[in-house]
Image (cartoon, rainbow, N blue to C red):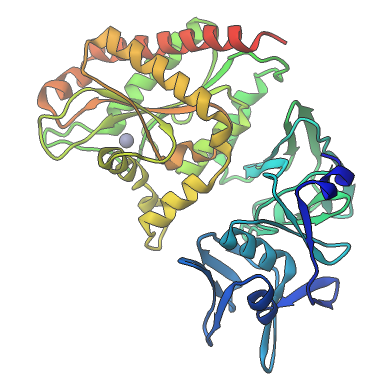
Length: 467
Ligand SMILES: [Zn+2]
């Protein structure tokens, strides 16, 4: 939408006092409180911003904030009787708290309030891939500026954290600054060192790929890169590249039974069979792990994105406290509706305890997973894929059809493709455990998965045509 029309329909300007210090606009908490109706509370150790029952707590020491949303602030200033917060961050947080689309206009130093959902739907960084999903009338472009890559999106509105900081010194990006002005939105990617990049544009999607050199502890990336080099760039709407993700591995066994059956072994065996069968059908297949090895959930998503996969299929085996539960269920990423869905997601997400030293609040993880826009773009496709696969596996195995379900799985979170997670059966049910250990039954499950993918491929390619 062009700004001229935009200003006439559904846009509103809010002017408010600000202080400009070294090229950064600051707004005082008192101003936010009186003009934006945000409640504020300042103590020595924290700053609380709240609106109704929602709140965001700022830690002024490390400049992080948590609560309804989480992130890093650019700057805080303090004088004897007031606290000033970087305008972009404060306006974004206020927008989230009050449920308004607020943008800080960095050229005219005022708030633009919009009644439309943002035209830039998401901005995501996964490994060395940066993706913008946007309305199709926008035309993002890149250029280099000293040690920064600029992505300019004329007329684009982006509603999200205005500042991202990455403390991993191995990572080529140091920070991202996102500013809005009447020219549109500017994403400034600040690099640790000069890095080559390429950008690609297709309908509603803009991708920037950094070409940084590999470090030795990025072995997993290396695997996917090697796989990737065999892949020709995709220019059509076909289902071609599939990532198969056997759950767990290494120090994370997944579910384990008294008889010593381990989920990680069963799912690796099934995944290998699926990969082999898919390759025979002409697909390019990448396994996130091909042996008994630990991979973080984030690495799995990175492998998927680096491979530009068209589908992501995570394979698991189920667990229940009693022995009786049995059957197959397939999940796509969305908010869990039932207690059971939540418990399965909680179990599969619990691998995070192997990845983080600190205690993680389960609810925060879930909030974070669901707060992500990436998968929302593929919700419909993921649901369709789940339905095709669930139906085919049940047909091949005659196992109990527990249906297509939805829950917040961390592993599916960052994947830019239709993604599903299959619970292939309960290893806690002695009968199903025995079956799941047999090669014959594993082959039936694998056949079901392959058939489901083939059906989805036909359906999808017919629906979206070839171009
Ligand atoms: Zn699992």
